[in-house]
Length: 192
Image 1: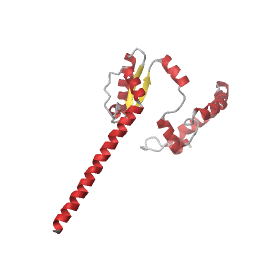
Image 2 (image 1 turned 45 degrees about the horizontal axis):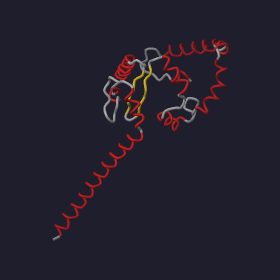
Image 3 (image 1 turned 120 degrees about the vertical axis):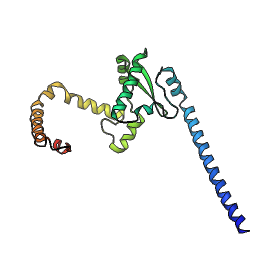
Image 4 (image 1 turned 30 degrees about the horizontal axis):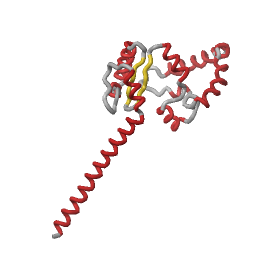
């Protein structure tokens, strides 16, 4: 009699775990459908841009960037050449469910760079680790900082520092000359 109770408990646990797995699969599918629905305008825009490079569901063009740095550079060249073949110089690059538009047309790039100033989600995530410095700050922070810094980096001002650059470059060359042929080294201590 106790064996039937044990089997019944085992089957109920198994049934419960199967239901849990089915529920999780159902929730994942619903989340994917919700994401697709809420980003339908982005997907419509992605379809308007012509793309001859295959993008797979859920991963997009990410498969092109697998491998070493040489493979990643080849992937960028493939995507860039495809963008050059388009009339508008634009190419939709899907990374997962995010649409990134590659631009090779100089006029289109100028318009985008002057009007689209907010950072992407990836850049916003970097602020968690790095903070809101001038590079990662939102437009409301970096625009006033840039207006203060631009006069500092004009040509006349930088020419006055050329002698300082030359002096420190010579010191760096001498320091690195001492360790030539010693194998791999950390150059960080020589730059500080």
